[in-house]
Image 1 (cartoon, helix red, strand yellow):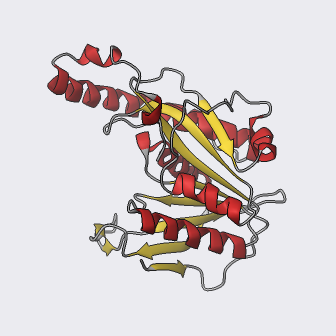
Image 2 (cartoon, helix red, strand yellow):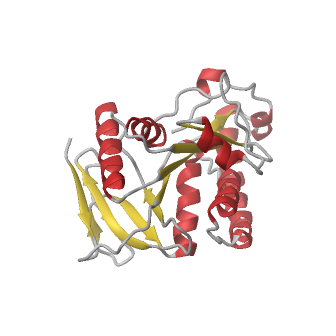
Length: 266
């Protein structure tokens, strides 16, 4: 597979021991929603675009009514403290296994060259019904970094037997980061495992935790305002879809919980 990492500014600005936060599509799109909200509010600088022949074989029409190849974007947010923050955002990620590994390897190599110090990946744990108050779970490459992010929060750290494989970039960035001796964690928010559902509440919880731990200053109140309208639309669409499939929309509250091996993130 070919991966091309294109630098956007002519001269890359100096970066202080960055922390990378990944949020690409997966179950409930929880990680993607969280990173998209943060990018939208914090207005970080676009520094890299990543292209690959493992991405969709198409072009997309932009807001300027022009076409663009699919890419994953890396944004830089300068922070007042000792660490800057990189956001990894996009509308897709490789799904074929070899391409997923090469994608993660390329990202970790790039991050290493920038003096990266921590990797945080975001994803969703698929449940059989909509969680009213989604829990956020955390695991990582060692106990020290897990304790660092879990301390003083509502994060759950007991995942064994509940969470199955962590799929795609959200998992491989942890594993490859560990090989390269880069501390890494994942935050996993409970969400509904339905293709039409968007895990906005779970994304909000992850942002709240990252705000607390990294002093990002994302305005949670703005997310709350946006959530109400989006959730109303999701609920209407979801009930209509489930009604077609199962006869009555209220049946979605009666599903049995998925077996443990179905609770995974992507």
